Length: 353
Image 1 (tube, helix red, strand yellow):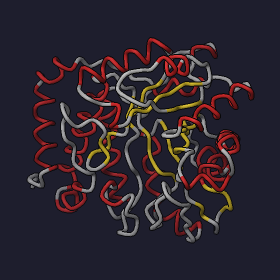
Image 2 (cartoon, helix red, strand yellow; image 1 turned 135 degrees about the vertical axis):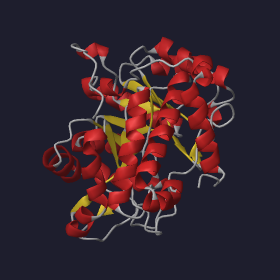
Image 3 (cartoon, one colour; image 1 turned 30 degrees about the vertical axis):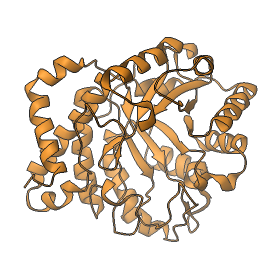
């Protein structure tokens, strides 16, 4: 089940709707001022922001000092998408579970739960609220940007393993984010570089990719839509589509969690227009928080636009705050961490059979 939201009765206690990035390993004076804006509600850190466990803990503490309600996120999926490596457990790509699940499903799901717990506990100990995980896309061998980030080649397998992974995340006290709704695995184009088009019918999408999200809905605290157009279903990119976000996700699937935009700087979002148009389109379609990363000029323009628009803080975002505290030294002395870390390393080295 999803983690119940904290009680935040008043709007000022909630985060603002803009998530942005930082340039280095310490906050600059300009960034301190930027983070204090009421429209800024989130920060995502990348590999360039990390030097050591002590440094990242100090950086995250400094971020919270600027804005106590802020959400601090990271992409710590495992495999090639892991921002914090040195000093933390090297996590395998989720694709390592696929072949194991076919001949030992219960044992493999237990492994996935332990890795979900491990990832979440380590990131919370580093000062993060959540990692944008897990990937719910299906790997049919077409999308290189998804590939082994996926739990498998069909919705049943992906849902079983992702639900187990999210069980571990919840045990550690971290909210979950399923991406990339309604499915990025059936397009070859990389939405970081271009706008992918998926020409399948709604029936095809519903019986494959969407089925994984439906089967995981009770475990999801948040969803991130894909920068993909499904023209047989709706003319708008999913992240800017009220049909996908309101009619399907909120309406048909009865999802009441957080909806994050994917990064609005990505090429897949460019067709909508300038950054102000992208922010408006994402929020108007139903996103609760918009990400503007790796382009400070665009981030500043988005901030100014949201301030001019009078964008209110969003109480729904409170659900993404960490629910437990883990101290790094105590965590690493525990038997569960030792066992889970050993399992992760074995899987990453393909020695888990």
